[in-house]
Image 1: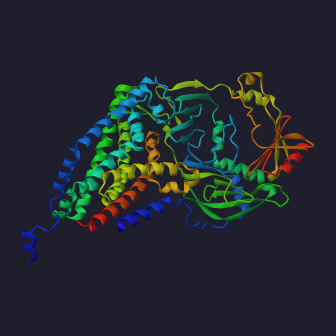
Image 2 (image 1 turned 90 degrees about the vertical axis):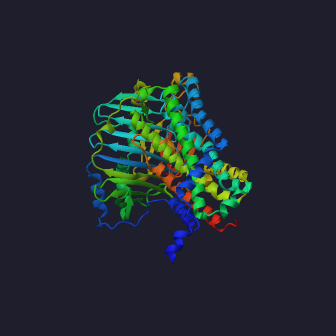
Image 3 (image 1 turned 180 degrees about the vertical axis):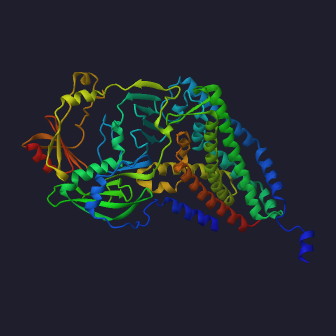
Length: 337
Length: 282
Protein backbone atom coordinates (compact mmCIF):
# COMPACT_ATOMS: atom_id res chain seq x y z
CA UNK A 1 0.00 0.00 0.00
CA UNK A 2 2.94 2.30 0.71
CA UNK A 3 3.94 2.14 -2.93
CA UNK A 4 0.45 3.23 -3.99
CA UNK A 5 0.65 6.24 -1.66
CA UNK A 6 4.10 7.10 -3.03
CA UNK A 7 2.66 6.96 -6.53
CA UNK A 8 -0.21 9.26 -5.62
CA UNK A 9 2.19 11.71 -3.98
CA UNK A 10 4.42 11.60 -7.05
CA UNK A 11 1.45 12.38 -9.24
CA UNK A 12 0.68 15.37 -7.06
CA UNK A 13 4.30 16.57 -7.26
CA UNK A 14 4.27 16.27 -11.05
CA UNK A 15 1.23 18.53 -11.20
CA UNK A 16 2.97 21.30 -9.24
CA UNK A 17 4.38 23.76 -11.75
CA UNK A 18 8.14 23.72 -11.82
CA UNK A 19 10.27 26.77 -11.25
CA UNK A 20 9.45 29.36 -8.60
CA UNK A 21 12.53 28.35 -6.65
CA UNK A 22 14.11 30.54 -4.00
CA UNK A 23 15.04 34.01 -5.23
CA UNK A 24 18.77 33.95 -5.99
CA UNK A 25 21.16 36.15 -3.98
CA UNK A 26 22.64 38.80 -6.25
CA UNK A 27 24.71 41.91 -5.58
CA UNK A 28 22.42 44.95 -5.39
CA UNK A 29 22.23 47.14 -8.46
CA UNK A 30 20.59 50.50 -8.94
CA UNK A 31 17.67 50.77 -11.34
CA UNK A 32 19.54 53.37 -13.40
CA UNK A 33 22.60 51.14 -13.82
CA UNK A 34 20.47 48.15 -14.69
CA UNK A 35 18.55 50.04 -17.38
CA UNK A 36 21.76 51.40 -18.87
CA UNK A 37 23.40 47.98 -18.94
CA UNK A 38 20.34 46.45 -20.60
CA UNK A 39 20.24 49.06 -23.34
CA UNK A 40 23.99 48.77 -23.90
CA UNK A 41 24.10 44.98 -23.55
CA UNK A 42 26.08 43.20 -26.22
CA UNK A 43 24.57 40.50 -28.35
CA UNK A 44 24.58 37.43 -26.11
CA UNK A 45 26.12 35.29 -28.86
CA UNK A 46 25.07 31.78 -29.85
CA UNK A 47 22.14 30.45 -27.86
CA UNK A 48 19.43 27.86 -27.82
CA UNK A 49 16.26 28.24 -25.86
CA UNK A 50 12.58 27.60 -25.48
CA UNK A 51 10.33 30.63 -25.45
CA UNK A 52 6.88 30.46 -23.92
CA UNK A 53 4.24 33.05 -24.63
CA UNK A 54 1.34 33.18 -22.22
CA UNK A 55 -1.37 35.32 -23.71
CA UNK A 56 -4.35 36.29 -21.57
CA UNK A 57 -5.16 39.45 -23.52
CA UNK A 58 -8.60 38.19 -24.42
CA UNK A 59 -8.36 39.48 -27.97
CA UNK A 60 -11.40 38.68 -30.07
CA UNK A 61 -10.50 36.24 -32.81
CA UNK A 62 -10.53 37.92 -36.20
CA UNK A 63 -10.88 36.00 -39.39
CA UNK A 64 -7.85 36.48 -41.59
CA UNK A 65 -5.62 38.05 -38.93
CA UNK A 66 -2.68 35.97 -37.78
CA UNK A 67 -2.26 36.12 -34.03
CA UNK A 68 -1.05 34.04 -31.16
CA UNK A 69 -3.93 32.11 -29.70
CA UNK A 70 -5.11 32.97 -26.23
CA UNK A 71 -3.38 30.73 -23.76
CA UNK A 72 0.10 29.37 -23.84
CA UNK A 73 2.26 28.71 -26.88
CA UNK A 74 5.90 27.73 -27.15
CA UNK A 75 8.65 28.02 -29.71
CA UNK A 76 12.20 26.76 -29.84
CA UNK A 77 14.87 29.17 -31.01
CA UNK A 78 18.48 28.76 -32.02
CA UNK A 79 20.87 31.54 -32.89
CA UNK A 80 24.50 31.38 -33.94
CA UNK A 81 25.02 34.94 -32.76
CA UNK A 82 25.99 36.11 -36.25
CA UNK A 83 22.66 36.55 -37.98
CA UNK A 84 21.78 32.93 -38.67
CA UNK A 85 18.89 31.45 -36.78
CA UNK A 86 16.31 28.77 -36.52
CA UNK A 87 12.82 29.00 -35.08
CA UNK A 88 10.52 26.09 -34.66
CA UNK A 89 6.93 26.37 -33.56
CA UNK A 90 5.45 22.99 -32.67
CA UNK A 91 1.73 22.39 -32.76
CA UNK A 92 -0.12 19.27 -31.62
CA UNK A 93 0.86 17.02 -34.50
CA UNK A 94 2.81 19.34 -36.74
CA UNK A 95 5.52 21.93 -36.77
CA UNK A 96 6.46 25.12 -38.53
CA UNK A 97 10.16 25.74 -38.90
CA UNK A 98 11.87 28.88 -40.11
CA UNK A 99 15.58 28.71 -40.87
CA UNK A 100 17.66 31.73 -41.76
CA UNK A 101 20.96 30.46 -43.16
CA UNK A 102 22.35 33.92 -43.77
CA UNK A 103 21.35 34.24 -47.41
CA UNK A 104 17.98 32.53 -47.61
CA UNK A 105 15.04 32.23 -45.26
CA UNK A 106 13.36 28.84 -45.49
CA UNK A 107 9.89 28.39 -44.04
CA UNK A 108 8.68 24.80 -43.64
CA UNK A 109 5.13 23.86 -42.74
CA UNK A 110 4.59 20.19 -41.93
CA UNK A 111 0.81 20.45 -42.34
CA UNK A 112 0.96 20.79 -46.12
CA UNK A 113 4.64 19.86 -46.62
CA UNK A 114 5.54 23.12 -48.26
CA UNK A 115 8.80 25.01 -48.19
CA UNK A 116 8.80 28.70 -48.94
CA UNK A 117 12.16 30.27 -49.69
CA UNK A 118 13.02 33.91 -49.77
CA UNK A 119 16.41 35.41 -50.40
CA UNK A 120 17.43 38.00 -47.84
CA UNK A 121 20.37 40.22 -47.25
CA UNK A 122 22.66 39.04 -44.49
CA UNK A 123 21.58 40.11 -41.03
CA UNK A 124 18.04 40.86 -42.07
CA UNK A 125 15.68 39.08 -39.73
CA UNK A 126 12.45 37.52 -40.92
CA UNK A 127 9.49 39.42 -39.46
CA UNK A 128 8.41 36.36 -37.49
CA UNK A 129 11.63 36.45 -35.47
CA UNK A 130 10.67 39.64 -33.64
CA UNK A 131 7.54 38.19 -32.10
CA UNK A 132 9.46 35.37 -30.46
CA UNK A 133 12.42 37.33 -29.18
CA UNK A 134 11.70 38.24 -25.56
CA UNK A 135 14.98 40.15 -25.39
CA UNK A 136 14.10 42.48 -28.25
CA UNK A 137 10.53 43.00 -27.00
CA UNK A 138 11.71 43.85 -23.50
CA UNK A 139 14.49 46.12 -24.72
CA UNK A 140 11.97 48.08 -26.78
CA UNK A 141 9.57 48.33 -23.84
CA UNK A 142 12.31 49.71 -21.60
CA UNK A 143 13.46 52.32 -24.11
CA UNK A 144 9.91 53.46 -24.88
CA UNK A 145 8.61 53.65 -21.34
CA UNK A 146 11.65 54.88 -19.39
CA UNK A 147 10.82 58.59 -19.47
CA UNK A 148 7.26 58.23 -18.22
CA UNK A 149 7.79 55.59 -15.58
CA UNK A 150 9.12 55.05 -12.14
CA UNK A 151 11.79 52.45 -12.60
CA UNK A 152 12.80 50.18 -9.75
CA UNK A 153 14.59 46.94 -9.12
CA UNK A 154 12.20 44.64 -7.33
CA UNK A 155 14.24 41.75 -6.04
CA UNK A 156 15.55 38.83 -8.03
CA UNK A 157 14.07 35.85 -9.78
CA UNK A 158 15.20 32.68 -11.46
CA UNK A 159 14.23 32.57 -15.12
CA UNK A 160 15.07 29.53 -17.26
CA UNK A 161 17.51 28.43 -14.56
CA UNK A 162 19.45 31.70 -14.69
CA UNK A 163 19.58 34.29 -11.90
CA UNK A 164 17.96 37.54 -12.93
CA UNK A 165 17.08 40.96 -11.62
CA UNK A 166 13.42 41.97 -11.74
CA UNK A 167 13.16 45.43 -13.26
CA UNK A 168 9.75 47.01 -12.74
CA UNK A 169 8.41 49.94 -14.75
CA UNK A 170 5.30 51.57 -13.29
CA UNK A 171 3.47 54.38 -15.06
CA UNK A 172 3.77 57.84 -13.50
CA UNK A 173 0.49 58.99 -11.88
CA UNK A 174 -0.08 61.39 -14.75
CA UNK A 175 -0.20 58.59 -17.29
CA UNK A 176 -3.69 57.45 -18.20
CA UNK A 177 -3.28 53.78 -18.94
CA UNK A 178 -4.92 50.41 -18.37
CA UNK A 179 -1.59 48.90 -17.42
CA UNK A 180 -0.38 48.57 -13.86
CA UNK A 181 3.21 47.68 -14.49
CA UNK A 182 5.66 46.02 -16.83
CA UNK A 183 8.21 43.66 -15.31
CA UNK A 184 11.39 42.70 -17.07
CA UNK A 185 13.62 39.93 -15.74
CA UNK A 186 17.20 40.82 -16.69
CA UNK A 187 19.93 38.18 -16.76
CA UNK A 188 22.39 39.07 -14.02
CA UNK A 189 25.45 38.13 -16.05
CA UNK A 190 24.69 38.86 -19.70
CA UNK A 191 22.26 41.70 -18.95
CA UNK A 192 19.84 40.55 -21.59
CA UNK A 193 16.12 40.53 -20.79
CA UNK A 194 14.90 36.99 -20.19
CA UNK A 195 11.23 37.61 -19.56
CA UNK A 196 8.70 40.35 -20.11
CA UNK A 197 5.52 40.46 -18.06
CA UNK A 198 2.66 42.90 -18.59
CA UNK A 199 0.22 43.37 -15.73
CA UNK A 200 -3.05 45.22 -16.14
CA UNK A 201 -5.07 47.12 -13.55
CA UNK A 202 -7.46 44.98 -11.55
CA UNK A 203 -5.81 41.62 -12.11
CA UNK A 204 -2.98 39.87 -10.33
CA UNK A 205 -2.36 37.47 -13.20
CA UNK A 206 -0.17 38.67 -16.06
CA UNK A 207 -2.10 39.78 -19.12
CA UNK A 208 0.87 38.87 -21.27
CA UNK A 209 4.07 37.09 -20.46
CA UNK A 210 6.77 36.15 -22.89
CA UNK A 211 10.04 34.68 -21.76
CA UNK A 212 12.56 31.89 -21.93
CA UNK A 213 11.62 28.75 -20.06
CA UNK A 214 14.88 27.10 -21.00
CA UNK A 215 18.03 28.80 -22.21
CA UNK A 216 21.63 27.88 -22.80
CA UNK A 217 24.40 30.03 -24.19
CA UNK A 218 27.28 28.59 -26.14
CA UNK A 219 28.22 27.40 -29.60
CA UNK A 220 25.41 25.73 -31.52
CA UNK A 221 25.55 22.91 -34.05
CA UNK A 222 26.11 24.52 -37.46
CA UNK A 223 23.65 22.01 -38.94
CA UNK A 224 20.84 23.83 -37.18
CA UNK A 225 21.33 26.82 -39.47
CA UNK A 226 21.08 25.04 -42.80
CA UNK A 227 17.97 23.70 -44.44
CA UNK A 228 17.57 21.22 -47.26
CA UNK A 229 14.03 20.79 -48.52
CA UNK A 230 13.07 17.18 -47.72
CA UNK A 231 12.05 14.80 -50.51
CA UNK A 232 8.37 15.14 -51.37
CA UNK A 233 8.10 18.75 -50.29
CA UNK A 234 6.76 21.49 -52.52
CA UNK A 235 9.23 24.35 -52.75
CA UNK A 236 7.93 27.77 -53.73
CA UNK A 237 9.57 31.16 -53.95
CA UNK A 238 7.97 33.58 -51.55
CA UNK A 239 6.01 36.16 -53.49
CA UNK A 240 6.78 39.75 -52.70
CA UNK A 241 4.40 40.47 -49.90
CA UNK A 242 1.37 42.27 -51.27
CA UNK A 243 1.43 44.27 -48.08
CA UNK A 244 4.84 45.74 -48.87
CA UNK A 245 3.65 47.68 -51.89
CA UNK A 246 0.49 48.85 -50.18
CA UNK A 247 2.36 49.86 -47.08
CA UNK A 248 4.43 52.29 -49.09
CA UNK A 249 1.34 54.06 -50.39
CA UNK A 250 -0.45 54.06 -47.07
CA UNK A 251 0.16 57.08 -44.84
CA UNK A 252 2.31 56.47 -41.80
CA UNK A 253 0.25 55.85 -38.64
CA UNK A 254 -0.16 58.98 -36.52
CA UNK A 255 1.10 58.80 -32.93
CA UNK A 256 -0.64 60.89 -30.29
CA UNK A 257 0.87 61.22 -26.84
CA UNK A 258 3.91 59.40 -25.55
CA UNK A 259 4.89 56.78 -23.02
CA UNK A 260 2.16 54.70 -21.48
CA UNK A 261 -0.78 56.61 -22.98
CA UNK A 262 0.46 56.56 -26.53
CA UNK A 263 -2.36 56.26 -29.03
CA UNK A 264 -1.64 55.08 -32.53
CA UNK A 265 -4.08 56.17 -35.22
CA UNK A 266 -3.81 54.33 -38.50
CA UNK A 267 -6.03 54.27 -41.52
CA UNK A 268 -7.63 50.99 -42.48
CA UNK A 269 -6.45 49.40 -45.68
CA UNK A 270 -8.95 50.23 -48.36
CA UNK A 271 -10.40 47.18 -50.04
CA UNK A 272 -9.11 46.79 -53.53
CA UNK A 273 -11.55 45.67 -56.22
CA UNK A 274 -9.70 42.36 -56.35
CA UNK A 275 -10.38 41.74 -52.68
CA UNK A 276 -14.05 42.45 -53.12
CA UNK A 277 -14.27 40.03 -56.01
CA UNK A 278 -12.73 37.34 -53.90
CA UNK A 279 -15.57 37.79 -51.45
CA UNK A 280 -15.51 38.29 -47.72
CA UNK A 281 -13.24 35.29 -47.16
CA UNK A 282 -10.90 36.27 -49.95
CA UNK A 283 -7.93 36.72 -47.62
CA UNK A 284 -7.55 40.44 -48.19
CA UNK A 285 -5.92 42.14 -45.27
CA UNK A 286 -9.08 43.97 -44.18
CA UNK A 287 -10.79 41.74 -41.65
CA UNK A 288 -14.52 41.93 -41.09
CA UNK A 289 -14.93 43.84 -37.84
CA UNK A 290 -18.65 44.50 -37.89
CA UNK A 291 -19.44 41.58 -35.60
CA UNK A 292 -17.27 42.50 -32.63
CA UNK A 293 -17.08 45.33 -30.16
CA UNK A 294 -19.75 47.88 -29.33
CA UNK A 295 -21.04 50.92 -31.20
CA UNK A 296 -19.67 54.28 -29.97
CA UNK A 297 -20.00 57.79 -31.29
CA UNK A 298 -18.72 61.27 -30.49
CA UNK A 299 -17.67 64.53 -32.08
CA UNK A 300 -15.04 62.56 -34.02
CA UNK A 301 -17.65 60.40 -35.76
CA UNK A 302 -18.97 56.92 -35.10
CA UNK A 303 -17.22 53.64 -34.77
CA UNK A 304 -16.86 50.40 -32.90
CA UNK A 305 -14.99 50.07 -29.63
CA UNK A 306 -13.15 46.86 -28.75
CA UNK A 307 -12.01 46.37 -25.16
CA UNK A 308 -9.43 43.91 -23.91
CA UNK A 309 -7.65 43.58 -20.60
CA UNK A 310 -4.70 45.73 -21.61
CA UNK A 311 -5.79 47.79 -24.59
CA UNK A 312 -8.69 49.52 -26.24
CA UNK A 313 -9.27 50.05 -29.92
CA UNK A 314 -11.79 52.17 -31.79
CA UNK A 315 -12.44 51.57 -35.45
CA UNK A 316 -14.26 54.49 -36.98
CA UNK A 317 -16.72 54.25 -39.79
CA UNK A 318 -14.47 56.48 -41.93
CA UNK A 319 -11.72 53.87 -41.79
CA UNK A 320 -9.44 55.05 -38.99
CA UNK A 321 -8.19 52.77 -36.23
CA UNK A 322 -7.06 54.13 -32.88
CA UNK A 323 -5.28 51.73 -30.56
CA UNK A 324 -3.64 52.18 -27.19
CA UNK A 325 -3.17 50.69 -23.74
CA UNK A 326 -5.55 53.36 -22.50
CA UNK A 327 -9.20 53.85 -21.51
CA UNK A 328 -11.60 54.61 -24.36
CA UNK A 329 -11.82 58.29 -23.39
CA UNK A 330 -8.15 58.85 -24.27
CA UNK A 331 -8.78 57.29 -27.64
CA UNK A 332 -11.73 59.54 -28.41
CA UNK A 333 -9.70 62.60 -27.39
CA UNK A 334 -6.90 61.53 -29.69
CA UNK A 335 -9.32 60.91 -32.53
CA UNK A 336 -10.87 64.35 -32.05
CA UNK A 337 -7.49 66.08 -32.42
CA UNK B 1 19.29 -26.62 12.84
CA UNK B 2 17.98 -23.90 10.63
CA UNK B 3 20.36 -25.00 7.92
CA UNK B 4 18.97 -28.51 7.89
CA UNK B 5 15.42 -27.25 7.84
CA UNK B 6 15.88 -24.99 4.89
CA UNK B 7 17.70 -27.71 3.03
CA UNK B 8 15.03 -30.34 3.47
CA UNK B 9 11.70 -28.49 3.35
CA UNK B 10 11.49 -25.85 0.65
CA UNK B 11 9.71 -22.96 2.32
CA UNK B 12 6.63 -21.33 0.89
CA UNK B 13 7.08 -19.39 -2.28
CA UNK B 14 10.41 -20.81 -3.33
CA UNK B 15 9.31 -22.11 -6.72
CA UNK B 16 11.84 -20.77 -9.23
CA UNK B 17 10.74 -17.39 -10.61
CA UNK B 18 11.85 -18.29 -14.11
CA UNK B 19 9.58 -21.31 -14.25
CA UNK B 20 6.63 -19.31 -12.90
CA UNK B 21 7.09 -16.57 -15.49
CA UNK B 22 7.49 -19.13 -18.26
CA UNK B 23 4.25 -20.86 -17.23
CA UNK B 24 2.40 -17.52 -17.16
CA UNK B 25 3.85 -16.57 -20.54
CA UNK B 26 2.65 -19.81 -22.16
CA UNK B 27 -0.74 -19.42 -20.53
CA UNK B 28 -1.15 -15.84 -21.77
CA UNK B 29 0.18 -16.30 -25.29
CA UNK B 30 -1.60 -19.57 -25.99
CA UNK B 31 -5.01 -18.08 -25.31
CA UNK B 32 -6.83 -17.96 -28.66
CA UNK B 33 -8.44 -14.57 -27.96
CA UNK B 34 -5.04 -13.00 -27.35
CA UNK B 35 -3.74 -14.40 -30.62
CA UNK B 36 -6.81 -13.29 -32.59
CA UNK B 37 -6.55 -9.81 -31.12
CA UNK B 38 -2.83 -9.51 -31.91
CA UNK B 39 -3.56 -10.68 -35.46
CA UNK B 40 -6.23 -8.02 -35.87
CA UNK B 41 -3.86 -5.38 -34.47
CA UNK B 42 -1.39 -6.25 -37.23
CA UNK B 43 -4.07 -5.31 -39.76
CA UNK B 44 -4.49 -1.75 -38.45
CA UNK B 45 -1.21 -0.28 -39.82
CA UNK B 46 -1.87 -2.06 -43.14
CA UNK B 47 -5.36 -0.57 -43.35
CA UNK B 48 -4.04 2.89 -42.50
CA UNK B 49 -1.35 2.51 -45.18
CA UNK B 50 -3.89 1.45 -47.82
CA UNK B 51 -6.19 4.30 -46.77
CA UNK B 52 -3.40 6.85 -47.14
CA UNK B 53 -2.39 5.52 -50.55
CA UNK B 54 -5.98 5.38 -51.82
CA UNK B 55 -6.55 8.93 -50.60
CA UNK B 56 -3.99 9.86 -53.29
CA UNK B 57 -1.41 11.62 -51.15
CA UNK B 58 -3.91 14.18 -49.99
CA UNK B 59 -4.47 12.89 -46.50
CA UNK B 60 -5.09 16.20 -44.77
CA UNK B 61 -3.35 17.39 -41.64
CA UNK B 62 -2.16 15.65 -38.52
CA UNK B 63 0.01 12.58 -38.27
CA UNK B 64 -2.08 10.62 -40.78
CA UNK B 65 -1.53 13.37 -43.33
CA UNK B 66 2.21 13.24 -42.63
CA UNK B 67 2.32 9.56 -43.68
CA UNK B 68 1.67 10.34 -47.34
CA UNK B 69 4.89 9.76 -49.27
CA UNK B 70 6.73 9.32 -45.96
CA UNK B 71 6.12 5.71 -44.97
CA UNK B 72 8.29 5.58 -41.87
CA UNK B 73 5.88 7.91 -40.09
CA UNK B 74 3.34 5.08 -40.24
CA UNK B 75 4.59 3.01 -37.27
CA UNK B 76 4.63 6.08 -35.00
CA UNK B 77 1.25 7.26 -36.27
CA UNK B 78 -0.25 3.78 -35.85
CA UNK B 79 1.05 3.47 -32.29
CA UNK B 80 -0.26 6.94 -31.37
CA UNK B 81 -3.60 6.18 -33.01
CA UNK B 82 -4.00 2.81 -31.27
CA UNK B 83 -2.82 4.05 -27.89
CA UNK B 84 -6.14 5.87 -27.61
CA UNK B 85 -8.23 2.72 -27.13
CA UNK B 86 -7.09 -0.41 -28.99
CA UNK B 87 -3.79 -1.08 -27.22
CA UNK B 88 -5.30 -0.35 -23.77
CA UNK B 89 -8.06 -2.80 -24.72
CA UNK B 90 -5.49 -5.56 -25.19
CA UNK B 91 -3.83 -4.77 -21.87
CA UNK B 92 -7.15 -4.55 -20.05
CA UNK B 93 -8.20 -7.93 -21.46
CA UNK B 94 -4.98 -9.54 -20.27
CA UNK B 95 -5.34 -7.96 -16.82
CA UNK B 96 -8.99 -8.97 -16.59
CA UNK B 97 -8.12 -12.59 -17.34
CA UNK B 98 -5.14 -12.54 -15.02
CA UNK B 99 -6.98 -12.20 -11.69
CA UNK B 100 -10.71 -11.61 -12.15
CA UNK B 101 -10.88 -14.28 -14.88
CA UNK B 102 -9.16 -16.83 -12.66
CA UNK B 103 -11.48 -15.92 -9.82
CA UNK B 104 -14.49 -16.39 -12.08
CA UNK B 105 -13.26 -19.85 -13.09
CA UNK B 106 -12.43 -20.76 -9.54
CA UNK B 107 -8.80 -21.35 -10.44
CA UNK B 108 -7.51 -18.37 -8.45
CA UNK B 109 -8.19 -20.32 -5.24
CA UNK B 110 -5.73 -23.02 -6.14
CA UNK B 111 -3.16 -20.38 -7.09
CA UNK B 112 -3.60 -18.66 -3.73
CA UNK B 113 -3.23 -21.99 -1.91
CA UNK B 114 -0.27 -23.16 -4.02
CA UNK B 115 3.21 -22.91 -2.53
CA UNK B 116 3.82 -19.61 -4.30
CA UNK B 117 4.18 -16.40 -2.34
CA UNK B 118 1.40 -13.88 -2.89
CA UNK B 119 3.96 -11.26 -3.88
CA UNK B 120 5.39 -13.58 -6.52
CA UNK B 121 1.89 -14.26 -7.77
CA UNK B 122 1.39 -10.52 -8.36
CA UNK B 123 4.78 -10.24 -10.12
CA UNK B 124 3.85 -13.23 -12.29
CA UNK B 125 0.47 -11.74 -13.25
CA UNK B 126 1.96 -8.29 -13.90
CA UNK B 127 4.60 -9.93 -16.10
CA UNK B 128 1.89 -11.61 -18.17
CA UNK B 129 0.13 -8.26 -18.72
CA UNK B 130 3.42 -6.52 -19.59
CA UNK B 131 4.23 -9.23 -22.15
CA UNK B 132 0.90 -8.62 -23.89
CA UNK B 133 1.63 -4.87 -23.93
CA UNK B 134 5.11 -5.42 -25.38
CA UNK B 135 4.03 -7.97 -27.99
CA UNK B 136 1.06 -5.84 -29.14
CA UNK B 137 3.23 -2.71 -29.44
CA UNK B 138 6.05 -4.52 -31.24
CA UNK B 139 3.58 -6.07 -33.71
CA UNK B 140 2.11 -2.63 -34.50
CA UNK B 141 5.59 -1.11 -34.85
CA UNK B 142 7.05 -3.86 -37.04
CA UNK B 143 4.00 -4.18 -39.29
CA UNK B 144 3.92 -0.39 -39.41
CA UNK B 145 7.52 -0.18 -40.64
CA UNK B 146 6.95 -2.93 -43.24
CA UNK B 147 3.64 -1.49 -44.47
CA UNK B 148 5.19 1.97 -44.51
CA UNK B 149 8.08 0.82 -46.69
CA UNK B 150 6.11 -1.52 -48.97
CA UNK B 151 2.65 0.05 -49.28
CA UNK B 152 3.34 3.75 -48.77
CA UNK B 153 7.02 3.91 -49.69
CA UNK B 154 8.51 7.22 -50.68
CA UNK B 155 11.26 9.35 -49.18
CA UNK B 156 13.88 6.73 -50.28
CA UNK B 157 13.85 4.78 -47.03
CA UNK B 158 14.36 7.95 -45.05
CA UNK B 159 12.09 9.68 -42.56
CA UNK B 160 11.08 13.28 -43.12
CA UNK B 161 10.56 14.73 -39.66
CA UNK B 162 7.83 17.18 -38.72
CA UNK B 163 10.62 19.78 -38.49
CA UNK B 164 11.40 19.33 -42.20
CA UNK B 165 14.71 17.51 -41.78
CA UNK B 166 15.53 14.09 -43.20
CA UNK B 167 16.71 11.16 -41.06
CA UNK B 168 18.47 8.04 -42.37
CA UNK B 169 16.92 4.58 -42.00
CA UNK B 170 18.93 3.65 -38.91
CA UNK B 171 18.08 6.80 -37.03
CA UNK B 172 14.45 6.48 -38.11
CA UNK B 173 14.37 2.97 -36.60
CA UNK B 174 15.82 4.43 -33.41
CA UNK B 175 12.97 6.92 -33.29
CA UNK B 176 10.40 4.16 -33.85
CA UNK B 177 12.07 2.21 -31.04
CA UNK B 178 11.81 5.17 -28.66
CA UNK B 179 8.15 5.58 -29.55
CA UNK B 180 7.54 1.86 -28.94
CA UNK B 181 9.33 1.96 -25.59
CA UNK B 182 7.33 5.00 -24.54
CA UNK B 183 4.08 3.34 -25.68
CA UNK B 184 4.85 0.25 -23.59
CA UNK B 185 5.40 2.54 -20.58
CA UNK B 186 1.99 4.13 -21.02
CA UNK B 187 0.39 0.71 -21.51
CA UNK B 188 2.09 -0.62 -18.38
CA UNK B 189 0.40 2.18 -16.42
CA UNK B 190 -2.98 1.21 -17.88
CA UNK B 191 -2.19 -2.43 -17.09
CA UNK B 192 -1.27 -1.69 -13.47
CA UNK B 193 -4.57 0.07 -12.87
CA UNK B 194 -6.43 -2.72 -14.69
CA UNK B 195 -4.73 -5.34 -12.48
CA UNK B 196 -5.76 -3.41 -9.37
CA UNK B 197 -9.38 -3.40 -10.52
CA UNK B 198 -9.03 -7.05 -11.48
CA UNK B 199 -7.95 -7.91 -7.94
CA UNK B 200 -11.18 -6.51 -6.53
CA UNK B 201 -13.74 -8.25 -8.76
CA UNK B 202 -14.66 -11.69 -10.01
CA UNK B 203 -16.07 -10.37 -13.28
CA UNK B 204 -13.56 -9.79 -16.09
CA UNK B 205 -16.08 -7.55 -17.87
CA UNK B 206 -16.01 -5.10 -14.97
CA UNK B 207 -12.26 -4.64 -15.55
CA UNK B 208 -12.71 -4.06 -19.28
CA UNK B 209 -15.58 -1.64 -18.77
CA UNK B 210 -13.80 0.35 -16.04
CA UNK B 211 -10.54 0.68 -17.97
CA UNK B 212 -12.10 1.68 -21.29
CA UNK B 213 -14.75 3.83 -19.58
CA UNK B 214 -12.05 5.43 -17.46
CA UNK B 215 -9.95 6.27 -20.51
CA UNK B 216 -12.96 7.85 -22.22
CA UNK B 217 -13.86 9.85 -19.10
CA UNK B 218 -10.21 10.99 -18.78
CA UNK B 219 -10.30 12.09 -22.40
CA UNK B 220 -13.51 14.07 -21.87
CA UNK B 221 -12.19 15.68 -18.67
CA UNK B 222 -8.98 16.65 -20.46
CA UNK B 223 -10.98 18.36 -23.20
CA UNK B 224 -12.94 20.67 -20.88
CA UNK B 225 -11.10 24.01 -20.63
CA UNK B 226 -12.51 24.83 -17.19
CA UNK B 227 -10.93 21.65 -15.82
CA UNK B 228 -7.44 22.26 -17.18
CA UNK B 229 -6.05 22.17 -13.62
CA UNK B 230 -6.95 18.50 -13.69
CA UNK B 231 -4.95 17.59 -16.77
CA UNK B 232 -1.55 17.05 -15.07
CA UNK B 233 -3.16 14.22 -13.11
CA UNK B 234 -4.75 12.49 -16.10
CA UNK B 235 -2.83 9.65 -17.74
CA UNK B 236 -4.42 10.44 -21.11
CA UNK B 237 -2.93 13.97 -21.14
CA UNK B 238 0.42 12.60 -22.28
CA UNK B 239 -0.94 10.17 -24.88
CA UNK B 240 -0.24 12.57 -27.74
CA UNK B 241 3.45 12.99 -26.83
CA UNK B 242 4.44 10.08 -29.11
CA UNK B 243 4.48 12.46 -32.09
CA UNK B 244 7.46 14.23 -30.48
CA UNK B 245 9.81 11.49 -31.72
CA UNK B 246 9.13 12.87 -35.21
CA UNK B 247 10.63 16.25 -34.36
CA UNK B 248 14.25 17.09 -34.99
CA UNK B 249 15.97 17.68 -32.65
CA UNK B 250 13.71 15.63 -30.42
CA UNK B 251 11.91 17.30 -27.54
CA UNK B 252 12.01 15.14 -24.45
CA UNK B 253 9.82 17.28 -22.20
CA UNK B 254 6.43 15.72 -22.91
CA UNK B 255 7.79 12.20 -23.42
CA UNK B 256 9.62 12.34 -20.09
CA UNK B 257 6.73 13.97 -18.26
CA UNK B 258 4.20 11.44 -19.48
CA UNK B 259 6.56 8.57 -18.63
CA UNK B 260 6.96 9.89 -15.06
CA UNK B 261 3.18 10.15 -14.83
CA UNK B 262 2.89 6.56 -16.08
CA UNK B 263 5.39 5.44 -13.41
CA UNK B 264 3.21 7.06 -10.73
CA UNK B 265 0.15 5.24 -12.07
CA UNK B 266 2.18 1.99 -12.09
CA UNK B 267 3.10 2.54 -8.43
CA UNK B 268 -0.52 3.24 -7.49
CA UNK B 269 -1.86 0.22 -9.42
CA UNK B 270 0.95 -2.09 -8.29
CA UNK B 271 0.65 -1.04 -4.65
CA UNK B 272 -3.10 -1.54 -4.54
CA UNK B 273 -2.90 -4.90 -6.36
CA UNK B 274 -0.20 -6.19 -4.01
CA UNK B 275 -1.93 -5.11 -0.81
CA UNK B 276 -5.24 -6.55 -2.00
CA UNK B 277 -3.69 -9.89 -2.95
CA UNK B 278 -1.71 -10.13 0.29
CA UNK B 279 -4.82 -9.68 2.42
CA UNK B 280 -7.24 -11.63 0.22
CA UNK B 281 -8.85 -14.81 1.54
CA UNK B 282 -8.07 -17.88 -0.48
